[in-house]
Length: 464
DNA sequence: CCTATGTTCGA
DNA sequence: CGAACATAG
Image (cartoon, rainbow, N blue to C red; front, side, top):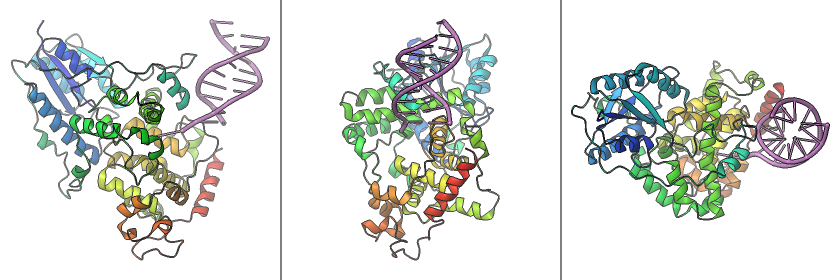
């Protein structure tokens, strides 16, 4: 009865309110915590550079927390199912505990693992990385929701979540530890150019950083309703990478913030949007790979094989489109691995509508550069902007970047991220070119707004 | 109980 | 446009 239990960590790098950790601890048996860097399971999306930086730091912290409990973190690289099966064999473990994940590759890994383990050990998957398990909130007719608002209303009925469980106080150790890699050998941190040097100024990966972030946000959550659209202010939670890596549970976030009245409801809606995205990829695993609407797959995107299209894409990536709000956002992303959500929508809309470039190119760039890159959230949000997804929108959403910049008072934000424009004052900064005060070292607009708008409308009309 | 039709509304 | 629900048949 004292066979070891394995904890299989993935994007759930916490000890508090983590059902797999709790179950293993409660067994009274030796516990073997394992993290596997898996770039090989079929359909796997290899983590981008920014995510890898975050992962390194987060694993460091998790390892330290486990050591405080007298335990360790076993690190392996390769196909998860093979490593876990091997660890089961070499340690005599009879249970592997993990949290449910919904990315297609993780579902593959789970299936493969169950098959590989056979009768030797049991894979026990727990809930808890989402407010409710995807697929469990259904319409009156028993089918999963495709539209956000009814999903929100239905899920809201099941809230608040149960009280968060605290971390175990100790974990029993096995007689013999399985072999482990050394984290530093994985090369998750960039070296050639150490572009991540500044990331540490902006982020504290790990559970302690997540909790600090939550506390800081809790004091201003009531301002979120109005403040979330103002990139120049610091009124958003910045919890996305912490939630993505599971350093804090969404239930913990909900319970900390709810009860402050209707003002925080807007934030809770965003937290539920995260659940919604998982519900979408749970129904449509290919969501990140192609447009959901069949008709929309015929959209006449500009050809990335053409040199000028490639140049436009590159200008967007580097924040040199000549549209200050777009460029500020793209440069913030490059510098910090994160972008304010209002600006994400503007920048994404610009790539898709103004440059008429396939949303999947943008999705991929975000995947590589965001510290919060998440298969579900990223693809659902890109398809939302492109209008190719499950939300039924009758009109083509073409954001006017200059109008948005003014409306949401992005002057300070632009001055912070686009140094060429740092000396330009407020009404002019949104569109210096039009006001005749564009500095020579700031690029001219890559395309005119009117012209781009007409081209996008024509392209979308073709697939109506 | 199941399907058909009307109405409402969308990060 | 089309999802979701209410109501009708």
